[in-house]
Amino acid sequence: MSETDSGTAECWEAAADDNGDNVEAASSAVTTTLNVNAPVFIPNVNAPEFVPSFMKDNAGHTQPAAPDPPPESVVTDVKEDSTMVNNDGDIPADSWELAADAATPSPSQETPPSPPTPTTPDGDEDEENECVKKKVVLEDEDQLVKKEPVNVIFIGHVDAGKSTIGGQIMYLTGMVDKRTLEKYEREAKEKNRETWYLSWALDTNLEERDKGKTVEVGRAYFETEQKHFTILDAPGHKSFVPNMIGGACQADLAVLVISARKGEFETGFERGGQTREHVMLAKTAGIKHLIILINKMDDSTVQWSEKRYNECKEKLVPYLKKVGFYSKDITFMPCSGLTGANLRDPIDENVCSWFKGPAFIPYINDLPPLNRNVTGPFMMPIVDRYNDRGTIVMGKVESGGCKKGDNLLVMPNKTMVNIDLLWRDEDEVSAVRCGENVKVKLRGVEEADVAPGFVLCDPSSPCKTGKIFDAQVAILEHKSIICAGYSAVCHMHTVAEEVTVKLLICTVDKKTGERSKVRPRFVKQEQIAIMRFEATGVICMEAFKDYPQLGRFTLRDEGKTIAIGKVLKVVE
Image (tube, rainbow, N blue to C red; front, side):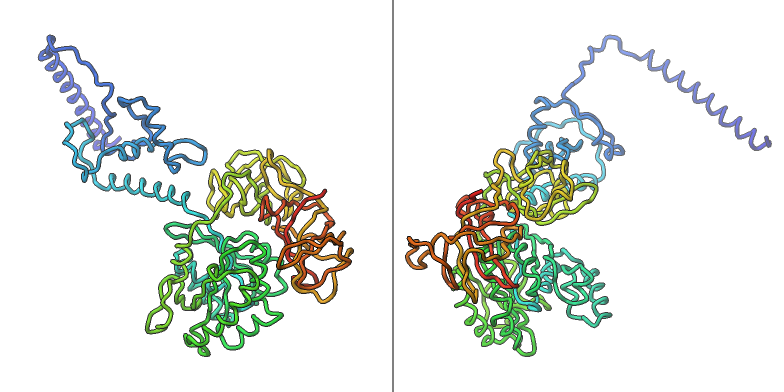
């Protein structure tokens, strides 16, 4: 060891010896000055635990001292706020601090000043702000749970601009950031599809992006202060109408997108166009309110012309009434999906001076609440399923609600399953309720044993199943006659099954509603009849009067919708 090192070692040893002498001297001084006649010290067991300012970050891990009321009351108060309980049902360590903050009167309240109590030393104000921020986030999560779920489907002819409007709404509501859209715009430009970039927010499939046609029902969501909206982007091409029917069965509100561009509206609305069929299928699916967005008003052939807007409106109204939409259920709005005009903010008067109505998003936000079967037994038709370290099913809750850990029944297989996990819009939750589009991870069933059209339901009240059922059917469009032995594809909620007419029971008079006493030999277009159907496989269904969403169906043949109907009775 060098001299320098040895000198250093001697220095710190000497310093340690000096400190030891000082400690001994200090302790002897305290002993000589100790007051032996001082009163006995009585600790205050109700005092809050002292936490130094430099340990505030770890304060959440310390156990709070018992306050004057019993600690159970604090836990009870915390449980009232659902956001303060995590997914496992445990209360976070710092929730008692937030409860105490909430109980503290605010400075605005006129309360007498309380006597000073032992508190922590004055620390940085940033730590207090962090606590406030944390509390605000929890309150926001609580508000999220209370928001009304609304499922909106965008329907209409191919190339009307459904996906573009959906993408623009996601951008305007902050669900897609500007950087992502700029990336889409660059990629679209490379493929000479500059105007398609907004639709790529919903058309995630490579084939859909290359061809510019939506194939599967796209899903996205956005929120307002009162409501949580799920966007369902339906395909407009006639080849994918079955996919559109599956999406319409999950919707509460339909948005019919019309292209105002010269020639495009006429093509979509004429016979063979999808505008008519989509409107009729939306009504059959049980959608009561329809918003018609006259899109592409900024096109060079339109230029926000009131004359063109009224022309489209006058042609549509008679057909909408014929299908069953009343005037109070129909709302027309001009818009531009590409520029976002009249979607979130009202149109500038310099652009369109003749329209004085509200913009699209504020309008749907102010619609009255929907009637839900919240108290009924749980029921969820399965739209799709896949395997991701377990069987995961998707669908819309049509009745009741459920929570993690519940035991449910998969019909028609009658397989008992347990809920392992629940998701609402990619966010894991502990419970779901009627009206929400959710994903459920099931334990106790394999993916191969579940198919679209199966129903997840309450074991105490399973849905009915059968192959033979009686139904009232309205024949919309069919060139030939329909008699016993006729076959078609039946689309009921999320199931598509081939059915055969087994028996014609009677016809129903359109005006009076009276049933014929003689069994008809056949029925034809624009007649209403009660028939007995037999399906090739077992279908989950309910009588229309009991569960409307599981009792409606559509009959399709040769790529056309020929009839709509409602289940009257499940025979066997």
